[in-house]
Length: 586
Image 1 (cartoon, one colour):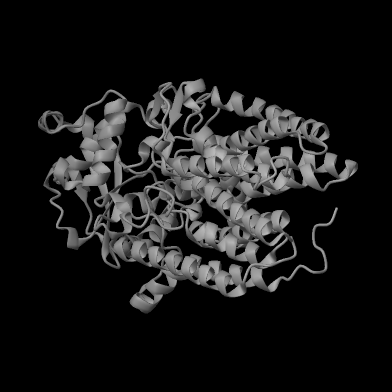
Image 2: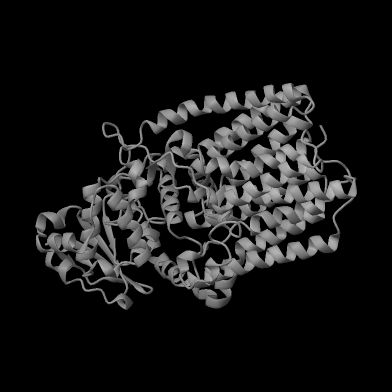
């Protein structure tokens, strides 16, 4: 089996990798240039769910069990088992990162920087390998790999129009780099595709069986890494199996037997996965916005593009422009079809779980890859030769255009979220101080008892990425499912009460997300409910949970009069722009 022939040139992929490395570091470089030495956070793209993942990894670095909750401090213990969460089931990335951090003596932030760079380079390399394996054109493979990764938002509803809107939440740049999901598993999805391609087209008998085992192991890694990647891999290989069965290319019966072997190994890896799923908390389905429906969908942009591309390939076959038994055509068609399956699997399963994640993290890249491979097929058909390369000038223009788009959307997002990044940068010293205070707490390894109230909810989530102490309330507390609904609602009201705020003072988009989750779970967080809660607040409420620290900034002008009725604050420790108070119940 020929994998790296002598005529393969490495300089195209090296240039593509250098370009991607620059894109991954571009937000950090910009902030270094703007803020200079004042900038201390090594990783600048923490936002939303990424803070949850970082907090979970930080807890593992501290030696806490797989089923841990960095927000409430409630970990799995003998006699008091904690329920599973999607983070504890998808544990491969978190344990890999925590082991790396422990081995290299790195902080969670540092290891996330490393992951971002590694994923960017690995993704370019893997996509280059995949496109080259199919087309035998190294220049096209390098430009195609860069194009697929840079244009991920263009074929989604988060495309160019969203970047012209003033709302920061409308911008998502290079979505495959969202840490650590889907970033960690993203290159492995395409590794799985490469292995299957070699199984079908080039592998001798012994090597083919070895590749079947490797493909099965890769699927298992995806299974315990990210839900949307392993389900996409399963849907893709199913589509490929059906295409091979219908077209019956040369050696099709042997190919189907090998694909069946991959499927059997994948099914075996599902056994422990299903057992872990049985341990999920009953409320997880509503928390993750699971919808029970059999209704098909047709308006997801990757699905529309995949449908158009599939129609074009069928028409080309009908007109004799493409040969329907050509493995390259079948392989390309499988990537075009898979978005249709992903966005309509609920027709059979009856369950739809945030399909927007398919749009952002996998189906968009599949259709972009299908477009690149289709262009290669058309070029080969037009020139009549595999050896005829694409014009270098056209490839260079394409590469520069795609890199320019990737750089622009990255800079736009970095600039519009700079205020949040600045908060986390300023709060880093506080997080480190809390981390120092939380070591060797009362004979334990880390402090999972002293509850922290941070007046800014962004800072509250960031603190958990470096410090071990639990928080009174964070916006994404529901993700880890350790908090009963009634308690989570009470913690949110308590956060508002202590900080002298009302419902409108919470960030509008984030409060809308919180309200939606609470409503689905059967709880209301309206103004009337909060007023009733605040007027009936008493000492028992103040004691559960018992606060130990307050983190706030004088710039916020927080009214702590409600808090001071029940707690006594010390003089406070000034740490940069923040003040860390120790408090005790009156």
